[in-house]
Image (tube, rainbow, N blue to C red):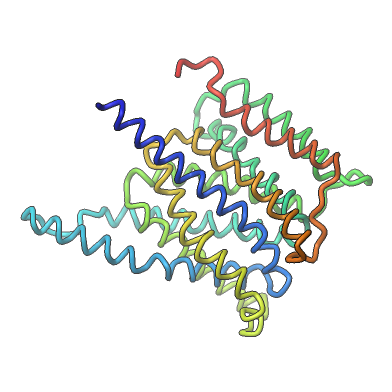
Length: 313
C-alpha cells in the first residue's frame, strides 16, 4: 500500500511538471509576440503582477482554511512558517527576476525555437552548480556538457563564428534558471507551493515594473496591443505554470523533475514554427537542418545527464 501511494504521488508530480513544460513551451511564442509591441521590463512586470493577482484568492483561501483547521484542533495560527515563506519568496523572486529579464531581452534577438533549446541547458547547469555546493558530480555530466557545447555551436553560431547577442542573453538566463531550480528545491518542502509562487511573482512584478518606469516608456496602448500575449504569459505561464512547478517538485527527485521540464524546448520549437507559418509571429522561426541537428544534440545531452547510469534505482 505504501508503494502504491508513493507511485501515485510520483505520477501526479510527473503530470504536473509535464503540464508545466507544455505551458512554458507555448509561452515562448507569447513572449516573442509581446516583444513586438512593448519592452522587456514592461512585459515582465505586467505579466508577473497579473500572475500574482490570479494567485491571491487561492492564497487567502489556503491561509483561511489552515487557520480554521488549526482552530478546530485547539491550536492557534495558520500553521505556515512565515519566516521561511517570506525569505523563500524573496530569494526565489530575485533569482526569477534576473532569469526572466535576461530571457525576455534575449528572445528579441533570437528565434523561439533557439531560445527554448538554449534555456533547456539549465538542466545541465543544475548538476554542474552542485560542485559549488560540494556535491559529487557524475562523469556523465561532463560528457553531457561537452555534447551541449557542440549542439550550441550548430544551433547558434553564425558563419562569422560568433554568438548572436540574443543567444548569449538566453544562455545567461539558463544559468540563472538552474539557480532558480535549486532554490525552489530547497524551499518547496518547507512551505506552501501556492504562497511561495505568489510571493516570487509579486517580487518580480514589483522590481520589473519599477525598472520599466526607470528605463522604458510603458503605456496603455502597448498593453492593449499586446493583451493576448500578456494574458497568456501572466495567467498561464506565471500564475498556473510556476505554481504547478513548485507543487510538482515537492517530493520529486530534482534531476527527474528537470528532465520532465526540459520538454518545454521541444514544445517551444514546434510552437514557434507553427506560429510563424500561421502568421501569428512576424519573425521567421524556421530552423535549418544544421540548427535542427544542434537542437537534437542539445536535447540528447539534456536527457543523458538525467539517466541513472551507474545507479541502483
